[in-house]
Image (cartoon, rainbow, N blue to C red; front, side, top):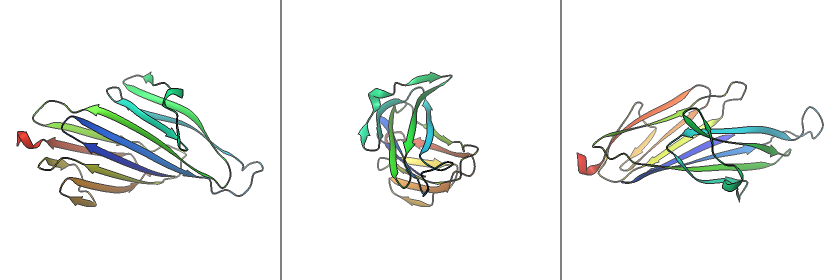
Length: 168
């Protein structure tokens, strides 16, 4: 597995695309090997709007309606992956930017017990002239973007505070 999170912040919205790449490295089709099955559950803020869900190149947003789970929205489905194959699952969410002089954005990525740690890359882009502070320094930073690289061997949490250019 590998996870790429691409977040784009504009003056009006935050759009995030989460792309998981699954690769079945097994070689045996017989028991106990064979087809890999994963019941995927994706949790997100109840304020977020699902823009797109793509599984193995097929747009499947209409197949899987958003469910409410406490304070969260949730999408869930069974992913099947034959021996020696790869697939991608991509979820795009959008959320309105708060109309305040400063605002806070938090990304939580809990690790899942029983799942081997895998790499995750977080890429964030934002409008020129904005001020941003984060709870941990990014590995890559330039004007209007920054990036983190990590592994899911622990609970991951990023806190980002934004000040749009017109509020500085």
